[in-house]
Image 1 (cartoon, one colour):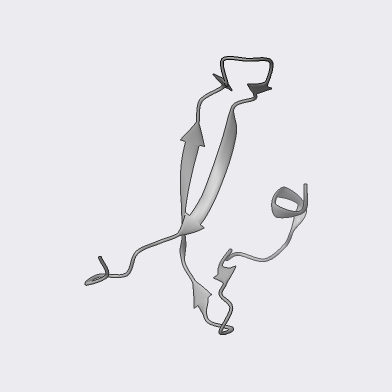
Image 2 (image 1 turned 45 degrees about the vertical axis):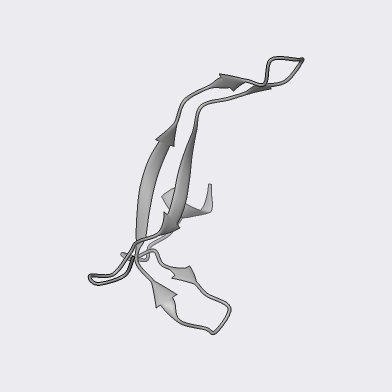
Amino acid sequence: MILSSSDEEEVFIKTGDNRLEDIETEHIEESFDGFDTVYPAAIALKAAKAEGDE
């Protein structure tokens, strides 16, 4: 995986207007859609909200 093998110390999300945003991580539990698909547990990366953002 590129994130675990990289020498860089920081990870950001690049937005459509080329700004770099801090990230938050979230654990996603394994889930079943009720029909025939099982989604494995995962880690989600999302842009961190800056102070004052709603």
